[in-house]
Image 1: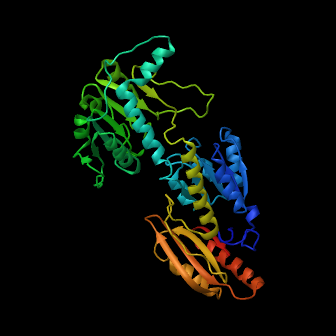
Image 2: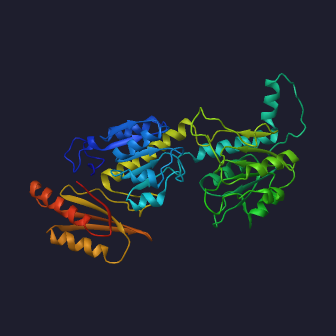
Image 3: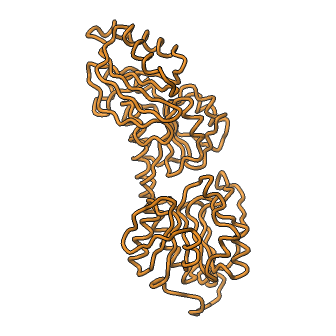
Length: 426
């Protein structure tokens, strides 16, 4: 079940008709993704993920599915996805997908870890300035008809210390932008990351909290980051310091943050992500932070710029096309990664996902030999639980005979007890 190579014409003969490869896109994924996938020859359908019945129906038909952060694909939903080969997360995170359940079914999951980092970094810097100047409070006062002209509590960011927790793709960009504004930057990361510019690495989270006039969080959702900032950590911050969370809603105890702001210990906050978020625009939303002074609340729009969404669409669509047409799993987040060369026109590529136990590759090779097909090239990548074997075989000059041998080979490989999924490409 695959297509032709990306540089071939989409109407060329393929192991599976491209027009029958069904792609479902949900959550208003940027139109560029649909254009690229249709251009590859696939049947692309756009549906509303808000209807659980529509989602389950789509999962039963789709060979590939594209989502953003709102759609939840748990093990139960994936169990109904008999045809599914790949999931495209058109966003940075993948915590909305049960990655283990997907891998156990041989479903590769791709995301876009780079494409919206600049948008998040720029939003963070805008909030650093806005919080220091209390711009949102000043604006709200004018909307109420109050002329609250005063310098009280307003500060330049130049010369102040920005503490960055998580010095990855976003945190490091925030660091560079902050230094350009004249800020001093300290950061903490659990890995030993090389600082950019004059940024200084702190020895601990507590060290960052003690030094910073403003703390910004850029960490993933993981067991070690959940409730990373709670009452104790807020108490370690300098009095009047600011907190920004454009990372994950699970990272901050928002009730503790609300108490710290009301007491005056924390001088303000900008929060884009929340422990519980509505599933749609018409759903009600509440947070203990609502209505507090010098607090900026945004509805999970850190990476939501036109430029970012377009870049994400291109990045993820390219990965899905390459996987379906070529078998490459490079940058997949849940299965072994293999970056494969173009397939020779005289060969057929067998893609074999299997449990990573001793002897499987030997069974695969002997099965191919029993079907009198010569292996022209082979590739293998594995992780602790799964293996991904890619074998380019010579099916012979007679296409009809080659088709019969290939079908018999695939049936035999499916009979190997450790096989998870198998398909071929030509």
